[in-house]
Image: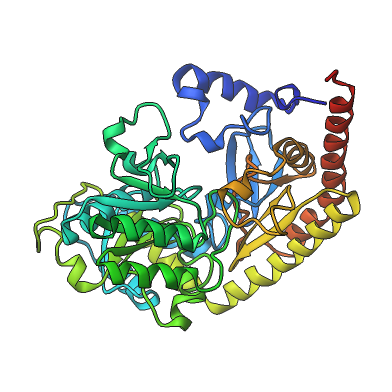
Length: 456
């Protein structure tokens, strides 16, 4: 068996930059997911990007299946977005005062989603933190319910692991988070209605909100079972809690109307609060949270719940987001769906031919490949997702990288396409899949051989 730490993916320029970065940046990266710790080797340092392609510091080109972890819906360096941003920069980069683009972007978000009012912030983490504070302020309650495997930024209260029982309060999931920060957080298995009902039966009059990813993408793509989000909305309403839908990843990505456009819009329900990010910033650091007018009216300066940010509603970021959403037409989503269907089918064919157990799951235009058959033929929650073969994925990842395809350097992430993924980009992916599937199969074969040879 080859350990992922033994994988040699060294490239001279990226290696040199990585060595320099580790001297001045913890781990050499500004966000842990960018490191190659889960797959081994040297992370690529990107010099530029255009359309569906990334170019690293050594001049190697890759088809990008990360798309900045979702925001680049139109591809990199889209000329119309660039032109709008250039005009915005020429007018000044920050004012510390209300601006025209933030009003226009808010109007665009309200037009596409079930929210009445929007408050801008600078990151998804900030949006999650603020939405929970607002929910607590509105309800006068303190308890927050979340699901294992759902990620809502690095908010202390949400970096928690489940306790020993369904209705047991959580414990911190990472050093640096005190027990007091998570003692009012309850963590449940995803897609588990019985667990939700049990928690509300025991703690319903103390629960301020239930927060969930509209369709989880941070443990791989695990779609809600039919009617699950509606069940959550109705359960919260019945107990006087707020239903908070995190659409940082899915918003304007899963569909034109976010994941709500795939379930809530047709089923006739809406979250009390929705969290946005990624696509709505057009590649710039911008996020937002919004909801019903009566709920949002509790925010300062209109109400007593305080929230503020010096760079919130930044004119450059909101201009980029506005340009992106205006260009995100039905044709864009049709293309993402078509290209995604082609790639998913090819991945299934290649992995099946190589004999690699796997599942391909989708939520709108988002999808991912799990290197497991799950339980009962699906990945329904974090426990199922944890069954994925990370070592096989590492072999698959490096084979794809060698063939010019840049996948997420983790087995537990969504794959993203853009409207710039043209025939050449898609064909590059299709051409790379058979050899990558074979590499994954070889990795599993070595592991099985090693296991048989190990004395029991």
